[in-house]
Length: 124
Image 1 (cartoon, rainbow, N blue to C red):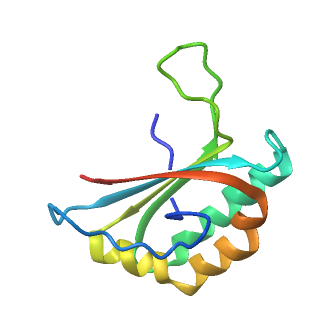
Image 2: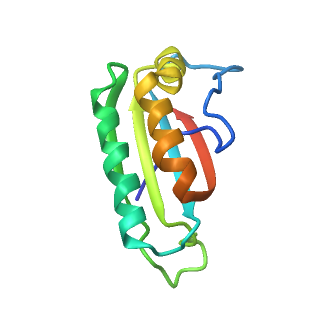
């Protein structure tokens, strides 16, 4: 299952995709560890604010949810929330990261609730 999007880092969500590019769609996958691990209210706030990114023009799709606990050694279930934002290309990704709605969500919801994030950006 693929979870994942919204920030490049807690210290600032203004990253620029560079390097090799296929020019294809981008999946921006974000894993979040809460400051209060397992806090259901905080988890839900992050999921809901992530879904609001559907209103950003460059965003094609948003999926967000909580981790599925697993006994399988290959599965990392240590995070609380996963978000996946699908965008048309690298330029759309950069526009999304700089969009005021995204920046506001990071400052007002994500940073106050999240201890750590890990981001994976994948070209399709």
